Image (cartoon, rainbow, N blue to C red; front, side, top):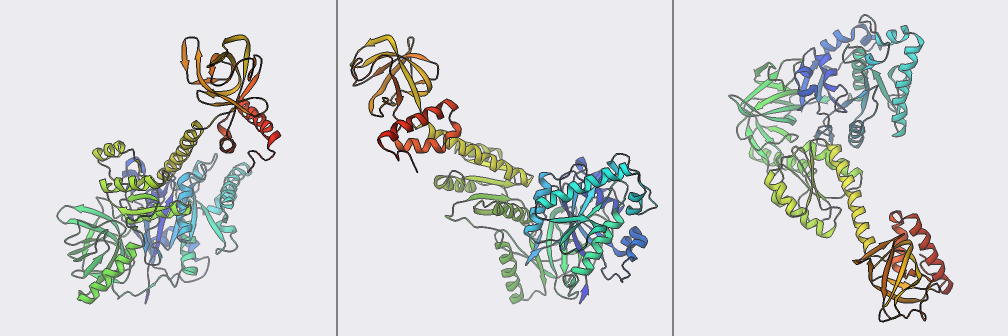
Length: 595
């Protein structure tokens, strides 16, 4: 048994400084080379213990304990936390996470999304409160450690800093998480450690690394024990085309060892891939695997935990996030591993079924799982979860679900390709498709769609109901006494439509609105303040109705109950008339409209 490097994933909001923080540690320039200085693809860096010791200096020796952890393997995730749920059998690939939060901006939607995913997968994490250098009046001394620097500031700068710190503590509290500045934490099993840092100046980075190493050594020792000589277990981070090598896999190997010519079994969306390792390329220590200029060197074998580029034939259908296993190549061993990896994949994929739920798609298994976890947390049912570009079959499934439930008849896609002709096909079918490269936007837009749909359904429901209305038969404006009676009316409150039933002040139905005219124009709807001519069947002016009478819409009891539920859409005056109608009805029937 041996102790492997600690697998650290870095998550947080899109521009709060995740890559810059790693960049400062690596002393490379990954951040400046990225589009808009935002990480565009997942990567790995190997940070050996010697580097950590150089950065931390004497601060690492404060505990007096010998450091047995050989270093860190950092996974830099895209801003949308697609890979925060990088998985291995039985849990998350990451041993521990760094949640980067801009101390000046505080929590953002993706901060909350990252916390949700970390909590769902029970990944312990440390908070890096970044950009302390932007606090007004902040000056840094590269010769002094963080706490010394803070204590040397005058009280106004310290006060401003403490306020921002405790704003963060308060936000964590609201989420039911106890948090405290790292030097004030009393119990690391119950409190989150917040380490103030500056990715620009490097201030606080020694303290952050010290906390990470300390936590890993104290609480993760058993997890870090691996069989160095056993078969390799790993996860694909990225599938990339390399000149001269063809399709390659950027992979994290977290257990065992892998050699050239080993047989590897990789999980697949449809079926597992079985192939032989043609070449292993290892990045230089502190290098970033994704960088085009990264120096790789051929090796015959590698030991966990490390990041490695694998070249092998038949990788065209490989997908990021899939599990990888190695074996000697015996048939029964291959068969067993195929079952194992597909079982793991099957825990994330949901095949098509008759279940009612949204249809979800993603480009990677990690992205699919992250989307699935967040939807399940919000109690949103899923009918199928699959990988790859959107297909006609997916849209047909959405159609089928929509027939059973309008709210679930939606396709949610994360980071997936949609061909323009499919978008058009989806529109012609009247299907809803929401696709984004940021998970929280997918969910946010879906929730907005649901709210709009609810409103639309309620408005449809409302349009079928008899609405409350009170109107006056004007004196001197009887145009015909009967067959039908035609009178001038003024709508006092509410609204009335052709076909609506009418009752008197005693609650008895008198007639219905046959038609209405405003001037020479026939109208179907009349609202408050309007004066118009109304034709009414089966009544005679001077007998059942009189000039100067106030009449009301005769709302059926079932309509009344629905109107109470939908009263947010009624005007204040309509609500008043509704109450008046209920009082009239209850003179005859005390429980009318109750319940």
